[in-house]
Image 1 (tube, rainbow, N blue to C red):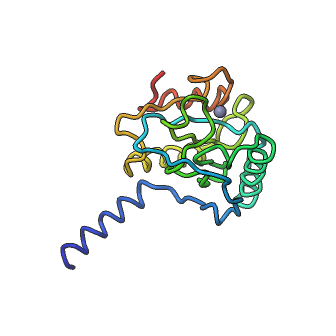
Image 2 (cartoon, rainbow, N blue to C red):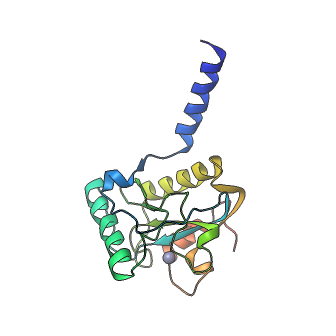
Length: 183
Ligand SMILES: [Zn+2]
């Protein structure tokens, strides 16, 4: 095999290992954003949220849920788009929200220096499942490897930055044990 091709394939392979499958906006039938502000990356913070809605355990149910969150953010909150940069279901899939190149609307004062990731469900009353936690870890390392998060980024729960219970005690207690977590 030619050298360049071999190194390209190794690169592709590493990329695939570190990035989870991401369900695109097109795949979940997103509404068009009314406006977008480019996010200057890499950013310093990854902020974890919960949606405070029921969980979803299949791609079909999670798509329904992601659509209803977008609907609520755009038509009730009058935001330009779904607030989160990414969402994760109990089906273990990552759903593209605003993505990693657009400023989100999820954590007051921190949106332009963070990527906001929402795990769908309410984690004040129940524990996140393994597929969603594995997807979250893989998404975080993918964002770091792709220079969307700084190498020494800080992982935060929404409650570390705003007076809120988000992302719920069970999800929060989990992420506080992860390597990048900093209070
Ligand atoms: Zn939150």
